[in-house]
Length: 168
Image 1: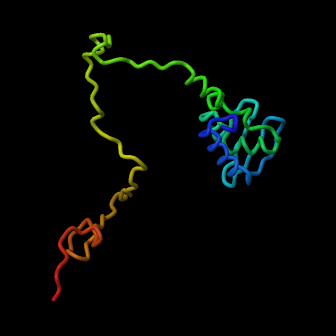
Image 2 (image 1 turned 120 degrees about the horizontal axis):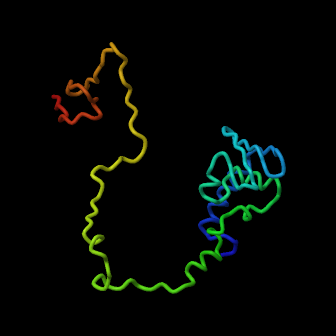
Image 3 (image 1 turned 90 degrees about the vertical axis):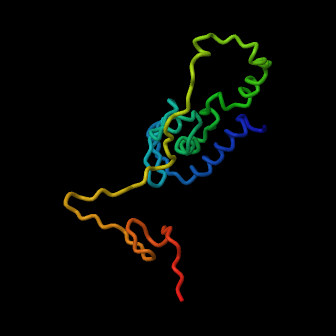
């Protein structure tokens, strides 16, 4: 690794730096900056390592707004990265010995823990946004779709499951 950060963190930081180059930065004082990224106006405080967008605090890796402020001040963005992302930290984590846990027969598991049965959740929440269905207003008549192929209600010819009629 040729940079102070791990490959993963460096790649993410480089992508963010490239996107932050077109942001407008207005310094408020030495550490606080007003950053405009086209449609968002964010306040960055470099001394507190905070941003109103809150991605800086969440990742503990400078987000675009903070990187734009660092670029304006010509200071290293590496000073604002969490020590967890440094390659020295990664090396320290894996420097110690890692022992196997042995076979399951050798484990000493208390009875109260062994008797607990953990089941998967009964219902899975679907990913993504919920579908947007419009509720009809009070007194509004509900008009159902009519299929052009079979004449059924509630679907159209693209979703029709009836067989295609043969024509002579």
